[in-house]
Image (cartoon, rainbow, N blue to C red; front, side):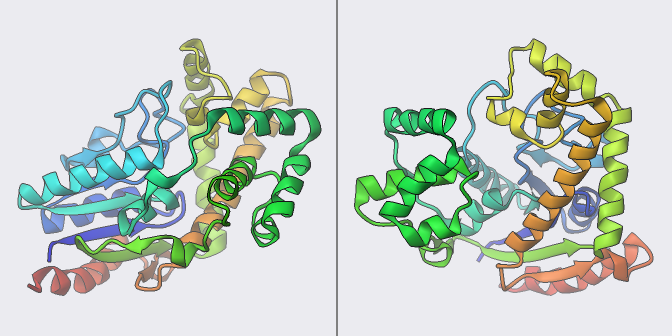
Amino acid sequence: MKKVIVLFGPTAVGKTQLSVDIAEKINGEIISADSMQIYKYMNIGSAKPTEIEKKGIQHYLIDEIDPRKPFSVSDYQKQAKSYIKRVIEKKKTPIIAGGTGLYVHSILYDMNFSTLPSDESFRKRLEDEAAQYGNEFVHDQLKTLDASMAERIHPNNLKRVIRAIQVFKETGEGIKGFEESFIENVDYQYILIGLTRNRDALYERINSRVDVLIESGLLEEVKELVALGLTEDDISMKGIGYKELIGYMNGAYDFDYAVWLIKRNTRRYAKRQLTWFKRYHHTKWYNFSNYSFNEEIINDIMLYILPQLRKD
């Protein structure tokens, strides 16, 4: 069975460099699983790898999609699977690398997107009700239909609340739990590698990265995107770093507070990422904080990967 390496972890943990180093050693090519790096023009805030950082390794699903156009997890799944096939046909090893949980999940599991509700008018009505009466108003509607699901979804996660209501209205049933909703994808053998760091070290890297992004011109990048016609309503602009600076530009708070929000929201996102990825029980985890040099962690990972790649 063909092998696919899946490398994931929280933001700023060190995935980009490590994935390139591994690709060099195993004749691999990298397919990004990052929901922000996929967009064109959004270079600074998404921390895209530079050509120097790529070291000549072919990367896919980076800088490919116009941020003014919609792009779904379903779209990602189709394109990523197409690239996996292409890399294997080139006699190379695909490496899925990124931190967007749903993107990774769409590769590991056969998520059936064709059954998702598509009644736009109903969705719009619920969104209008939330805007007029508050998210709790819509969340209360879910409670009357599916109390157990309402307990699992926070009222402010309006998108998921609305989807749950739509599913119930159209099928008469609630959304199934995570484990029973998807069937494992058996097209390939997946080698799962999880990366982490001790919390203080990770948070320090996150704060430092945000400072670097600001110094590199993130605010100017956001202004350029707004000039292209993008607003806070576009999915692409809801990414951390972009939405906070739009708030600053709209006068909601001052610049220093915007930077503080970016750091705080990124740290919170990293925590959610780790929670998500730890549900994959077949993952081999590596903690950067246990190593003095990157070469050491790379060597350990290679000792784990190579025997599996050599198996028939």
